[in-house]
Amino acid sequence: MADFDFNLLTHSPERLNVISTRLGAGNTPNDRWDDAEVGKAVKLGPNATHVHCENGDEIEAIVDNIDSGGTNGGYSFGGVARGNRGFRVKAVIGANQGATAAALGDLVVADAQVAKGTKGVARVKTGTPVVNKWRILALRGDGTAGTEVIIELC
Image 1 (cartoon, one colour):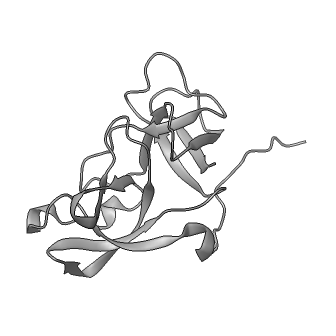
Image 2 (tube, rainbow, N blue to C red):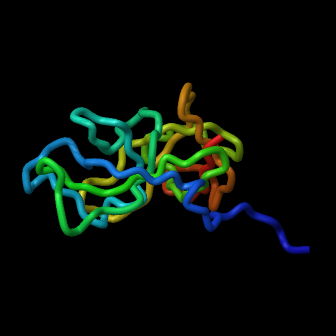
């Protein structure tokens, strides 16, 4: 019998719960986001925007899309998925995981995300989120930095 492994789901629009939002910390041309930001972890920022999560932040949403044609008040504009229970995304264990490897079922918070303009998925590490609880549903490696994981909002 083949081993079973949890995978990403094809989500219905209701599960994704994509909302339109301004993106980034600033509204100058150098602050603009492009498709390289899709899949990264974000949190609510100042001025009704979503910004990249920093090391230790709770993950509030995942960037779903970037509007290539326009801005809002000078900010990039797009959508973030603020899924509900069972919403799954691919992520990678980040460099700040520490000496203890992540394991199935561990709760995670954001690790430092890859630089703006660099394509990538959410970077996570084990932690103790209080409001936005994500857990590791599948490991594609040993749980150390660089391991691909599937995380699920619970």
